Amino acid sequence: MRMAVVSDIHGNRTAFEAVLADLRLTSPDLILHGGDLVASGASPAEIVDRIRDLGWPGVVGNTDEMLWAPQSLTDLANQSPKLQPLLATFQEMATATREALGEERLTWLRGLPRIQVHGSMALVHASPENLWRAPLHSASDAELGSVYAPLGQPVAVYAHIHRSYIRSVSGMTVANTGSVSLSYDGDRRAAYLLLDEDRPTIRRVEYDVDKELEALSSCGLPHSDWVAKILDNGCFQMP
Image (cartoon, rainbow, N blue to C red; front, side, top):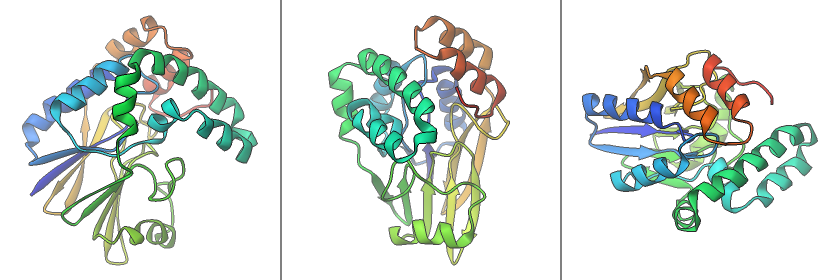
């Protein structure tokens, strides 16, 4: 069986459409999403509607949760004072995205599970116990094992960190999908994960970044200029 995991779309319709075109070429039997579907992008409602039309199963992400549970941002800011400027930015963007989605779409997002298991693969957005914290691509084998071995599957897939990688850890495979939008590894292309009989590969997909930058500039999203810088450079920076 061939599966694909597409994650961290973040409302980027241009990148998402390019990934859909690539999926028609790779032709997986099952496609799942890894959460963080809408926040920080120009087309949140369109992405939710498209995912629902496609019928992809998936998991909830941290920036999905913040839309109906803004208290999660406050709690995180209290735990990590250094992140307060970043989380305040998220809060303003979340308010605009919430209004763009409407209650019915928010209800659908709220219903997404935290874990999906298909065959020998388990999928979470960040880690099994926390939507906001996940090992980095440079994490030790010991850290990866302690976080993902409890899922009890030979293949553990997560997203969240916007940097794709594949590691063999103590008899299991840990893979990160990367991000359809807002890559942090210096490569502006969209990324997703393809699993062919448990053998993972990372797909990178070219898309028209300038077209998405134009959409961001005219969508009215607060701090869209900050999002545009990350999109354009393929690297994270603080607001």
